[in-house]
Every structure is written in structure tokens, then in C-alpha cells.
Length: 141
Image 1: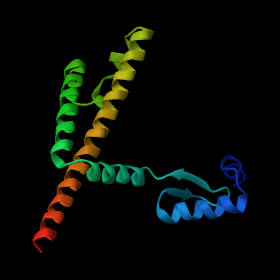
Image 2 (image 1 turned 180 degrees about the vertical axis):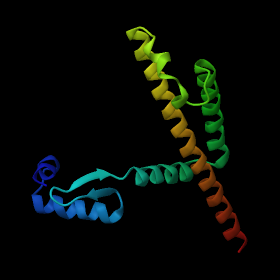
Image 3 (image 1 turned 135 degrees about the vertical axis):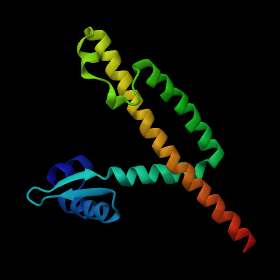
Image 4 (image 1 turned 180 degrees about the horizontal axis):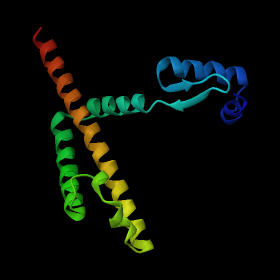
């Protein structure tokens, strides 16, 4: 706890209280007790990103972004001749020169990020459509 307090420039008790509040809010996950391990809750941040995108963009805008990412995804599938980044055989990487390996691994990382972004955008599109539907129904109520 003293490490967290030092990093946050506060007392250990203050850090403990703030951390407890973040755990209660679902922003942080805690595991174990001596010593306790705290990690950011990735599900919370993904949900927050979906909600932000859904509130800042229309379903059509989000669908357009998904379309652009889908085209990029198709280029990656064609480049690697596999359906997804996890299907790239290790031999493809092992048989390359060092500089090419680095470029290939970077491309695979970008592809994974692109896939993750597409998933978030799909959820945001659904959420934005639901918000729009709810807003439309409240106007007529």
C-alpha cells in the first residue's frame, strides 16, 4: 500500500480508502490479501469506452467506422492468407529475417487491435441504436 500511496502522493490510509472506493465502483479488481494485488478492471474500461462512443456518435457513424475497419481486416486476411491473427502459423514467423519478424509481429498486433476495436464499435453501435430507440419512444410517450 505504501508503494501506491507514494505513487499517488498521499498517505497510506488515503490510498487505502481511495482504492477501496475504486474496487467498490468496479474500476479496480483486488485479489489476495497479504499482499493484496490490485489491477485495473479491463471489462469496466471496455464498457466505459462503448458508452462513450454510443453517446458521442450515431449508429450510422459507428457503422461507417466498422466498415473501414472491416476493409482493413480483409487486407490483413489476404496478406496472411488466414482468417484471423491467431491462425498465423509460427513457422511463418520463424522462417523470416529479424527485421521482417519485427514487422510481421507488429502487423499481427495491429490486426488484433483492429479486431478488438471492431468488437467495441459493434457493441457501441448496438448501444447507440438502443439509446436512439429509447429517445424516440420517450418523445411519443
